[in-house]
Length: 91
Image (cartoon, rainbow, N blue to C red; front, side):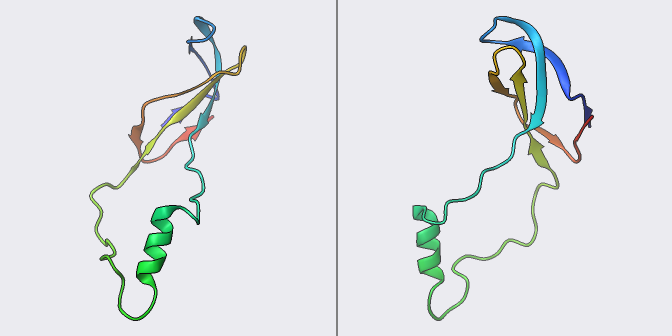
C-alpha cells in the first residue's frame, strides 16, 4: 500500500483538520531484565532441551501496520488502528 508522507487529518487537540506527517509504528527493544525474560533464561539453563516447542508453522503471513500521525501545528501524535498489509510504502 502506498501512503503519502503528509495527510490532512483531524487533530483532537486542535479540534480541526490539519496537516499530519505519517510514520510507521515500530516495536521498542525488549528489556533484558524483565521478569519474563529472566524466567525464560532460568528455564533454558542446564541440561535438557528447549522448555517450549519452537513454532514452525504460523497462521498469519502478514503483520499489522500501525501509522503514527503527528500534527504539524501542535506536534500531537495519534496512532491509527492496525491494518494487515504485506508491504507499506510512504511516498
